Length: 544
Image (tube, rainbow, N blue to C red; front, side, top):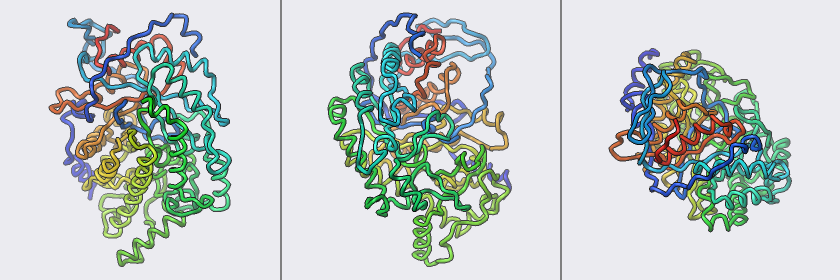
């Protein structure tokens, strides 16, 4: 099959009517709330500052996130003159932008802000609490609903099994509660460091890495035998190799300890959601495109199933199918930075669509869904009554090919003739978990201009995944993928958060901004952010 025919097949998928379609992003409704009153802050502060609903997130946040998104950083402008709506009047703004939408009276979408990756140090101590307190007061002053924080496994259970230290998090949570803010908490069972946006290094617990030195098969492994110690292979989910415990038992004990330790914050409604880490960067995917193994965008990545535990399972699956010679991974898939047409497996008409290829991809993607199923079942036991969420990365490069190779190596069995996200949405629905998806603020046109060879289509991917989520009736939220301080970026998020003229009135359940920093709090940047928050809340804004 030619590349053109692959694109033609891809074009048969349901798509939004245009790149900025009102149906690009939506979710279950979030009930209207009374916005938080503004708190006036003196201008001199800038020098010193350096939901109760389930949510779903977008594109892997930069907390220990691989390069799920690449966007041309050049400033772009559109023809026409911008008209900022203020009340019932339109005020001419800077040239080069289109008329902007008035979000007054639209549904209230809560806004959270991610805290810095290193807000808690390796000794589980809160870093610069006074600075953070002042920054949180400023966020509160513009109506931010809450903050998101990673609870790092490598910090809390660093030295001994079930030896938990929550001290720094307790102090942090007390500050958040005193300001009457909410908390989204991430159970981060992965390493931080070495990925885009990482400015600190937080390894897996020391006692785990000691086990890994003697048994490196506890990590995901590629065909060259390189180990990825960013997280544990799902092959040991049910194997007692962690000092007498399975991996899922370790995760459950950690989550149960957190629930007991912070009972008052759950009972008081301060913790509004728990996002459960399910893989590298906290995302439900295989670590198929690790930068520390030489991957560069837009490489197709590599399958990560060569540890002894996954290979044993693959052989058993092949024998059960009656074709024991299928108990191997494909050998014609290229390398991390290959392009699909260079491989026998991913090229148009390649082996990905053969009997063996379909068997292997079904097995590989099923293991991903089963891992999520196991961990989320235990998360619901640990956090009964609290909303839980899972994050799925937005792998949009090579989406306009027939095989979708970058998605296949990450575990999303989503070639042009198959919906690979419906099984994930169905699994999340089973556990009443929200879908956390990525790349909703990205534009396909920008990808074509910046990386035309990648055949990327983030808008098409978003359209497909969100429809899978809507069909499963699970809530959706989002976060920006890369640093955003400009109005163009905020307006794109707003358009996706509250689709215009959607007949079902769907919108995001929440939005989480990446990330709190002194740059965000600078005068002009913070004015743009305040304007964005008010529009997300459906408030009238007079900020031009």
